[in-house]
Length: 353
Length: 98
Image 1 (tube, rainbow over the protein chains, first blue to last red):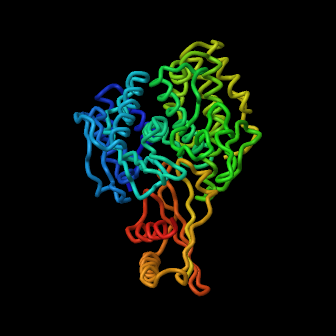
Image 2: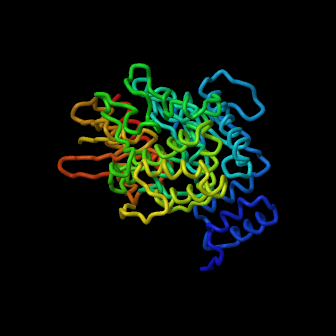
Image 3: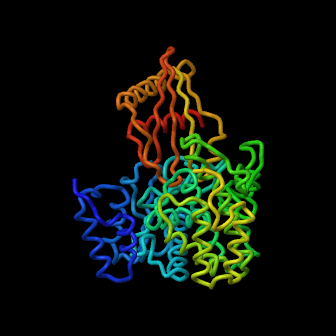
């Protein structure tokens, strides 16, 4: 077996370099390193780097209720006008807004930073109550029409899924325990920033809800999650009360199983979600300006195993680098994490994974 | 034979996990559908199981429990990695329990 001297995470960073020579050398190393060949994360990087001329071109496919994506039919691509199918158009527009957000706000060219194609699959399955990122593309269900409506109807859900792609191509946070909850939170942060940017809303005017459009009107629920007030997005007889915590004191210990949501990745994300909301309110103005830049640079500086404490520390140091030590922005970051029970710069007091 | 399906994960993971399982009983369904269910269960069991599936971000996972005259088996699949047979069994259970 060959051994690769350069750790994969360094190659990963080099692939993000703005210098084409450095990117090329990193690519060569990846391709010739037998040890890495076939690994999912490396396949993704290579696939992304090879399609660089695509400039994030969009393609939206109709699964026609199948769950097998290769059978899906291409319905609308980048240069096409609107088609008859509303879901196709909603996915197309949502991907376009999210692509423009990353380009204009973070100067990021698509999911991988190198113009990776954006592929959306709609009408997946029959009455399917979900949307997901499978490592290559975004997939949307129609909802059952009883509880859930069409998932393409929510811009923050589309941006949430595309955000998973961005995370996979940067820190690649593993999908369990705290790194997994952070992965989920970063997608919610992306979803809310894209929605606010699209609406031209300042942090204090925004609803900070994720998935407010995905329930049918009959269902008594505001949204899937609330970043402003985790734990309050829903409370009804059909599916109970929103279980998200808003403070480390209420962190929910769950096993790394399917039943345990991989250690509560969609549950404990409430804690960093609330921290981002507090930073945005503390700094004031638009969430995608200083708060968004601090979070985005911290994502790029994170690794697959970054936990809440480490991420909080990174946001504090990035705020210092970007806006100055003891700047109002850096103070807002410290205060926000404090309010959710995480003291920046301190050793983790709890041995939580 | 009784077959039950629980669904976990997904964008709405906390909600999905709280919804009741979907259950089918071959004694309480038309013979043709019961036969189809038995054939699909046999096909999925013949594939064997193995390990936890790939963790697609926000992908749902499905646990199907089969109880046939005291003999029990559990098979799992996910949105990002399921066999054709598993997908066919899943959609039959979903259709029959809607």
